[in-house]
Structures are given as structure tokens and as C-alpha cells.
Amino acid sequence: MNWIDRRKQKARRRRAGMTLGLLAVATAASFIVGMFLPAEHTSTSHAVLGRPPETVWRVLTDLDGMPLWRSDVTAVERLPDLMGKPAWREVGRSGPRVVELSLAEPPRRLVIQATVDGKPSLPMRTFDLVSIATGTEVIVTERVASRNPFRRVLVRLNLPRPAIERLLRDLTHRLGVSPRQMAAE
Image (tube, rainbow, N blue to C red; front, side, top):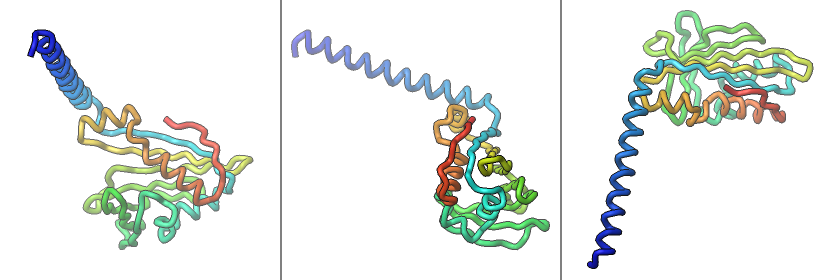
């Protein structure tokens, strides 16, 4: 091997070392930043649907029909009420979780919350249905908690697209309307 080849090889090793070093620094920085971010995060998304609030309400509260239109749910199993509130088990890609209907003000407001050992937990979804001239404005707010510092950083960067955007897309597909996405935070 001549001196030019040795010099090129040394340069490649130096670049590889610098790349690995930068990757390690970025990973450590993400972890440190994530440690200082709050565990809870709230995201909101809006959509306008060309259907009356009563129709949207019926679709949102139809437990037996959920697996037919929600892409994140493969099965729903009704459970006995938890402290007088309807409860069910949703089975999806992320595994089973028990959910309860925390608040229902037909056809305006619906609050659905996960439960752990019979106690309310996060995530919690709030559906606000506002009647407008062209149909219904659906405002979905989701509160989630994450213990993983890396995930906290990713959630703040909106890298895994919020589940509520997928839910609104599924809902508009179920209702057979062409939605006008108003805003997403």
C-alpha cells in the first residue's frame, strides 16, 4: 500500500469516527432534552365534516362498529361498567387496552379515557362536536404521557404523526365525506 492509499484510509477512518461521535452527541443531547420535557403532551386536530352532529355522535359511540372503520382497532369487547361508566377493551396494533366513557353530553362532547386497574389513566381523548352551517366541526384533543425521554422529543417534533389525525381520517372515510382539514397542532 502506497502513502496515498494510507492517507485516504486514514481520512475515511477519521470521517467515520467523527460521524459516530456526532451521532453519540446527538443521542445524548436528545436524551438530556427529553429528561427535562414534561411527560404529558396535548395535541389537537380539527376537521369539518358534511354531516350533522347527531350522525357523527352515533358513529363515535357505536362500539360494535368501531373495528369496521378505525384503522387502529381490530376488535372491541364490552366490559362491565367501571364505577357506573361504560367500559370496553380495544385490541389494536399496540395491544389491548381498557377504555371507559368518562363524559358524554350528546351530541356535543365525548371524553374517552384509558383505565389501568379500574382507575383513569392517559391517554385521554376529548371530542367536541360543533354544529356549523356546512355540517359539523370535530375538534379532537388527546392527552398522552410518555416515560421515554426520546419519545418525548419525537412527540414534540410531531414525528410519529398524532393518532388523532389518523382517527379523523378514518372518521371522514367512514362517513363518506370529503373533509376540509382546518388545523392541526
